Image 1 (cartoon, rainbow, N blue to C red):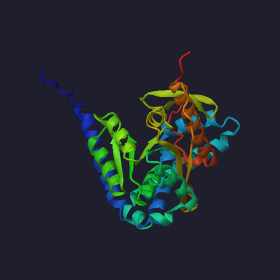
Image 2: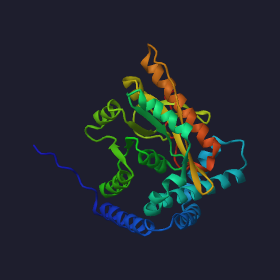
Image 3: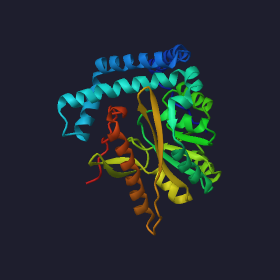
Image 4: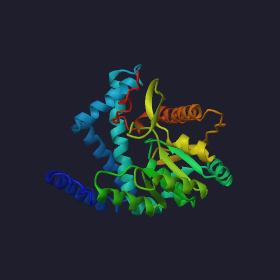
Length: 306
């Protein structure tokens, strides 16, 4: 018997369609802008969002209070405002695709020593589990590496609107990054195939999402952290790396680090230890430039069992 798929209510479908049209319209406008002008517009948009998005602003301030209890209210307010501004700038920079792709190598500084670390890991032939977070500009991170000729795929979550998902997929594909959509049929096999082929498999593990997770420290509190990166590396023997693309002036600095983890007899203990080590690297990157993280995300929403 054929299973009927329940459609969302008309009002929700209309809202999604209007949002899609708005995003397409904004992207169409921003895509041809000079990078500097797009950055300036994005900074203004971020400041506007901080002023009007009261709920997101309160979430950011609550997260900053947990992460930096030693800072004053004024300092945390300034950090939250700077975070909104940075995210606006980053989004508009990514949207200015014509200027972005023409200037990508100049915009994102990637030193030879850091590139050599990635090449050495890839040379072992078992692929690279490449871990990052929503730090700096993670879209530019993936695009810069893929455009340099390294075969790359990224694991991502579909949006609630397939049209928006398709937009994201096209943007990444134009930069040489293929997408594996988490939860789709065959996603797990696609991840294993990518590593078996010696490719880079990118994952962001700094958010509390509805995936298999482990509780590891993050800014002094246990936080539910996706375990897929550790599980994939331990299962396949792939190299494990962390990398970040963080803002420096009008550009970015991309840097990488390999995280060696000798496998022991207890796979679960290894997964926990490696996930904690990766989360610690993400925390360190955030502490270097705390205004470049998504503080409005409720990172500690899921609590560990008693």
